[in-house]
Image 1 (cartoon, rainbow, N blue to C red):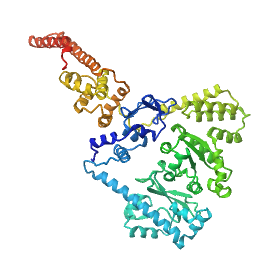
Image 2 (image 1 turned 135 degrees about the vertical axis):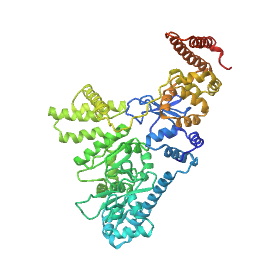
Image 3 (image 1 turned 120 degrees about the vertical axis):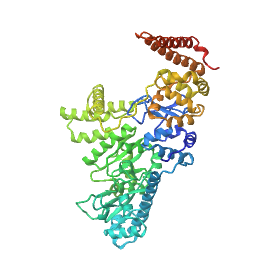
Image 4 (image 1 turned 180 degrees about the horizontal axis):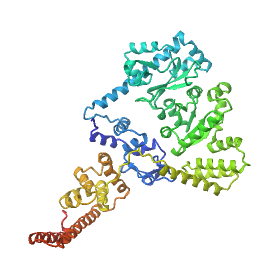
Amino acid sequence: MARIPEETIEQVLAATDIVDVISGYIPLKRAGGSFKALCPFHNEKTPSFNITPSRQSFHCFGCGESGSAIGFVMKYENLPFVDAVKKLADKAGVPIIEEVYDPQAEQRRRSKSRLIELHNAAAQYFHSLVRKSPQAQHARDYLKKRGFSKESAERWLIGWMPENPKEFLNWARENNFRGRDLVDAGLAALKAEGNPKAGIYVRFRNRLMFPIHNDYGDIIAFSGRQLVNDPNSGKYINSPQTQIFDKSRVFFGLDKARRHMTKEKFALICEGQIDAISCHEQGIQNAIAPLGTAFTEHHARLLKRYTDTAILCFDADSAGHKAAQRAFSILVPAGIHVRCASMPEGEDPDSYIQKHGADAFKTLLDEAQDFFDYKLTHASKAVDLADIREKSNLAKDLANLARLVTDKVTLDSVISKVAARLGVGDQDFRSMVFQADKQQYRVRNYDNIDESTPEKAQATPMDNTISYLCFLALNSSEVMEWLCEQLEALHEPMSQTPGGHVLAKILARKPNPSNPASIQTYLLGIEESDRLALQSAFSENLPENPVSVAEGATSMLISNHLQHKDAIIRAALKKPGLGMEEMTDLLRQAEDVRQLLSNLNERYIR
């Protein structure tokens, strides 16, 4: 398998500031010489996530996650190690040269590149048809009706897939794209699953084709909009999941909106692609849309990179209200504040802008309500608050939503607001929120255990003294050198003390404690169980005289080892029927141990 040389990994970490990396994903607050944040890897209300610039590491005291900038990117973006290294290397300008040719990795890279090439070429082909093909007149009429000009259609590279699949297949053949390429891209599918000889069929026919980009601008899929009503097919059809496309991890328009989301300090989330396009064309360039799927944690994490506020602009019907609630339940635990714009019945952003103009729509956005105000406004139309049972059910529903709010100040405000609107006491509603949170914790931890999920690696059992010596060695060059000089005395205690092999490996490799990149590179290269065992040690502060402390810890380690050895010898001497030779040997061993204990402080090399 191909691997990235350790020297290159160290270069990447040396050229990377972990604070800059993590602050690009979550907001940080300085706390003395370190930084704090709400942990992105578990739900918490009080910050326990610490970043230590001097060590170029992070550690969460709540869930135990820790590591380097590479480890953070791997965990946050769910990336494999090599991809995370390459992402940081690209940002830092460090060239990556893999040591060994890996045919499988090269094949995946070529396949991915081929799929992106196909998608870009197909998008240009579809766009040329919608502009010039006589058969696409109805598609041009539809675009004109929806307010699209030639320029806007070109900006979004909107195209048309012919009704006759042979036209597309002929184009693909002329451009050297095979049937297998079309199937891998999701533009076609096998007529008989598992039987390529049965032929393929084109997935999209007589549809407007909207290219879907990843957040870096590559075309990775298509969304096809129905032009002729067909009750047997959906209004929109998206490409299926492929090597380069997973709709649960993509927003339509994010490549164009991400910078504007950061500038405007909020993301406008619409229900459909045309709504998002219409907003952009009217200067509201922070608009995005999910791809016909429910919000996922991946969506929330992706959004969190660019903003911590979202305005939902969904339909005003019951389906739209439910969609807003589902989006809230995913976005808020990720630390994203949610507001909701109230659309008039039967309107969507595109139709509203066409009827009333962009300024009127911007006013709607300015007047967007906090989610709980929005929820109460619409619930009050459907719920009789004079009915105790209906009021109680609404309060439980709101408490279950309020428990998702991670910020304590915001939660206090929500509790006061909801309690006042429902006409109940603050403390009563707070108790309901606490009970909802407690109940959900039980469900999450006991009732919904996924037995198919692989067990997480367990930390290597480690003696406390060994653990502290590892910490000292990895944080002090003087301790590292001193311990390496004591290897003869330490060899046997390390081999027979829990976790001793971890210390032995550190002293054998000698990563440079004065270079955080060297330490983090070393930690990335060891067994996960050993790395987990070392995590807690890195929350310690280095003592003023680390070598003196290391001497004391080493004395304790050797002394404990010798006393244990002495106890074993004494127990052996008490066994009945010992021969003279065996007894003599045990007595000699006992004397050697006694001498070692009495001269313990003189064993060190000065």
